[in-house]
Image 1 (cartoon, rainbow, N blue to C red):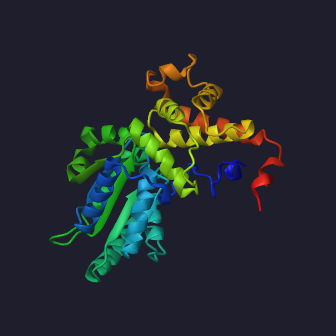
Image 2 (image 1 turned 135 degrees about the horizontal axis):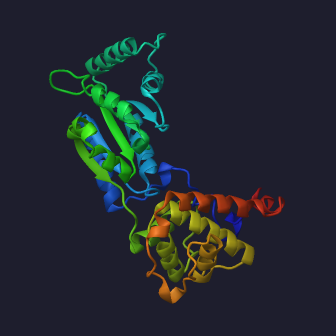
Image 3 (image 1 turned 180 degrees about the horizontal axis):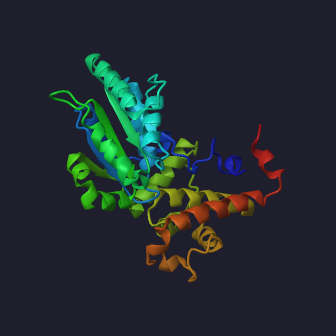
Length: 316
């Protein structure tokens, strides 16, 4: 819809975790380095944590690309609402280990044999579990026991647990102290600073084909950071909607008033934020998962309100 108007090849603010768009802040670079080091040195358990929408899944996809380039065997589990039986089913399926039985002991033997073969061949096997804060205690205990699959000197399976801060709180519970003690590396994602938000938006626009002509004014970027509180997922949603509104109004570059209008459309707060007050809002409303979900739903409804003929203007 707006790509031709702004001179873009693709939509720069899709919420999909596309590793091409991973913006490497110092914190992200440190997390990537920790993940690579932990896997290469066969450290066993690695914990990645961070607030909702701060780029954990995008970072994991970047890590997966690197693992595949290193010809490592990977299993990526993104549906963490499972029981122990599902865990082993997923593991065997992801690692492409043939096993006709669903008896857990025999599945475990198959997995152990396969891991030993990979180790003898000089290969590394990595299990990545996203949204790990949803894992139940029994499943977390099964995952801990997987670290018992080892040689006299090294772990056969490298495990990355990624989740929201609730995962860290869960791991502090007495029932999980054995698992907590086995975590050898911890890394975190964090919200963007105001400067990082501006650089983040500029980088995504560049990747999407922007030619350097300003699309957002500096004041508009400041408003985006304030409303999104530096959460990349919210930055994406606000910028996407601002592009749509600016296209409808045929306004370029995007002014802070457009960002403020977007914020009011989503009812971010009962109090209207003016340009002068940008940077003074409280954080609470932006940090809830419910807000992120409602923001996405509102964006979808807004898109559906356009006539069907509008999108065809950018097709060639």
